[in-house]
Length: 331
Image (cartoon, rainbow, N blue to C red; front, side):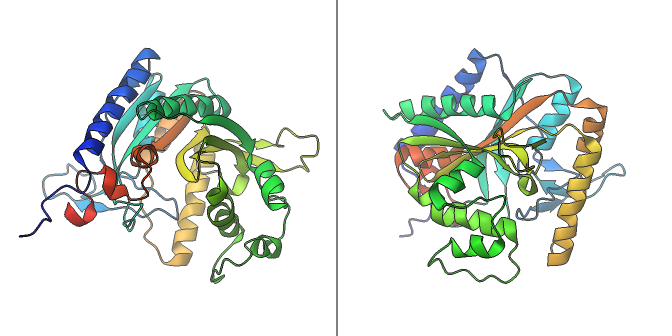
């Protein structure tokens, strides 16, 4: 008899997920951060070149709107529209969707926690993100030390090279015996490969490491700043962004948010140009989000945290199926 009807995660894992969700809501209730819900389907899509989106087609009356809608890859644009409307500190805990991402550590639909804090920068928000992760770890009797380091100092101290000044050849050589097809790869790709293949695997599992102030070319929706708080900043420009790792597992990605609608439109345009060169789909821009930026987004920092990855770290598993009721194969 087939067992394909059975859940992929254990009942204990599903109970832990429920406790985590309740704890997250309690965490934000204590801090006065409002829970909101935003649409899963959007008129605009995510332009980020390395993220693929799902689309759905609506068969009913659209009243002039587009029939094709994009399943959100994060609730970011809608949450920022609420911020521009004056909702204040807010968060959403819900499902998001990414096409082409299925396997041992990835599921095409997964749970994301995203929140925004008015008047904060990325460094302060990294600290609160660590507090939330520590709260989650306490549910399974664990704890971790919190450490912050700049992107530049991380590469300098552990790889012996400056990620802002090293040549592409030096970056490739630093991969050592990691065999990678170089066809079509650019500087940021080599930096990412060094992070995923050389740095992350060596991160201490007992440490939450916040890596902040990334290269400006990896700014996404973050503000840019001249210098990296060092006397020898060499005139570099950094993106006010952080990523939080628990051991080798990347849990969260946060920004000191960009407020300039024109600059954001320019960045979206660069994304679409990269997609065009690759022959990839070019999603329509989220004009409602850009209009909200034009109206005025309050100064804030925001972060997205992968809840499934956090649960995997809590349970010590590298299989996302272990923390889901039903993974993609059994959905």
